[in-house]
Image (cartoon, rainbow, N blue to C red; front, side, top):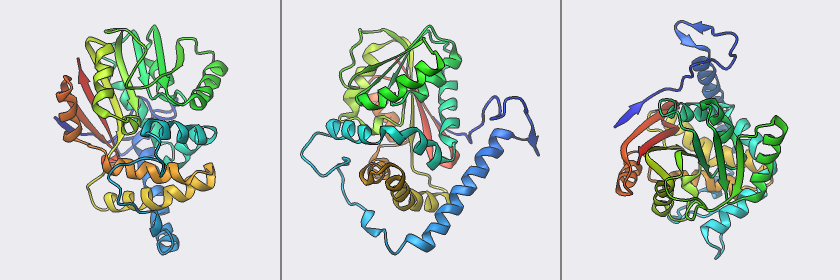
Length: 298
C-alpha cells in the first residue's frame, strides 16, 4: 500500500501560534517555502556551476564512500567519524530544516502502538531518538557504528538531561540485544548504509517483539516534474559542493546521492521487508517523494 502524504504536523513549528493560511497549516506553509528556496538555490546554481561539476557523476553500481578495499561498513564508519563535528548543522542547513519535520512524521507512525522500549538503529547524533521522547516511552536505546557521532549525541543528551536515552556502539547486522526485546525500532537515513540490507532487516526483526513495529525513514527519488529534475541537480551538484565547503569532506556528500540512486525504494523495498517476514507493510511519501516512511510489523 502506497500513500502520498505531503508532510504536516499535528502542531505547527511555532507551537504557540497554530495559524493557517487558506486552510494550510503553518507547518505546511513552512515546508513549501523551504522547498521553494531549495528550488531557487538549485536553479541559480545550475547557471553558475553546471559546466564545472560533471566530474561528480558516477556510474558505480556498488556504492561505497571511498575507493578502497575496506568493507562498506568500515568505510561508512570512517565517513561519519570524519563529518560528525558538522553533521547536525549540515543536515538542517542543507534541508532548510525539513528533515526535522520528516523525523516527527516518522515518530508519529508509532503513536497508536504506544511503545515502552524503543531502539533507534543508525542513531547517529540521536536526533530521532530525541524526537521519540514525544511518545513517552520508558526507555530509548540508540545504536550506531560511529563512536564520534555517538559522542555528539551523548553531549546533546547530557546537556538536556534526557536520562531515558542511552547510546551504544553497535552494528546493525549484529545487534547486542536479546530476541523480542523492543516494542518498536526506528531507522532514519540509515538503511542505505547497511552492508547487507536483508541481514540488517532480519536482525532488527529478531529483537522486535511479536506485534512490534519497524519504522524506516529514508530518502527516495521524486518522479513528478519539475521536482525530479530539481532534486537530481541539487543532490548531484549542489549538495557535494556545500558539503565539502562546510564539512571538509567531498566523499560523504557525493556518496549520499549515489546511495539514494541505487537504493531499492518504494515497493521494491517493501517487497524486501515482506521477504524478511515483516507484515502490514506501508509506504508514506513525503515532500513530493523526496523521502519516504516505510512501516512493517513482526
